[in-house]
Length: 253
Ligand code: CIR
Image (tube, rainbow, N blue to C red; front, side, top):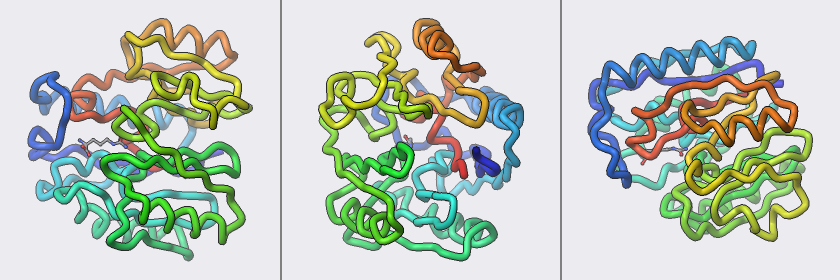
């Protein structure tokens, strides 16, 4: 069960955030509305939501997931791989101190984005991507193993972040798309396979009794419901324009 969630309101510089998509510039008013709907959905899931204020110096800082890896008893402050995002951790660390006594950090030359970290029960998968390098991944692996978790490094071929293409729902069930559909590391889990045209929906989040899914991906939503989960839909078009999905917008713990 998650008790807490941290989010950060998109700021006025959000439209200048990083992107590899060609979906156009986000509309600020719509982004703010969608962020409010996201918070409402989280509240429906029964979590306490800590809402941080935007900082225009960091256009991408609404994607708080990349700044930390959280477990029930310790936090790891990451070292985000994009230069314009690196300073986001300076604002996140004091917030985490309110919730955690034990805080580790990933140090340069290691880089690591939280979006590359997937937890499946006591096993963490750490993606190597354009943002997370081997040094950072190995540092996190060592921290996790010192705390009695298992950790496996996974090299990404196409996805932006590990969790862009895979989500853990609980009960041994994963949602997978693209390169993870047949990936040998994930063959022991029950799979909900996302059709290619709905690939973006592989980034959904299980929060207590619900799975929050992005609006507009009916086949994936149906498959998740057929597997026995209740869903909540949130429109994320303005976050998708900057390569962001549902998981990126919060830290859940
Ligand atoms: C970035 O390029 O860093 C942001 N525009 C998107 C970050 C998405 N975060 C995530 O998948 N965890």
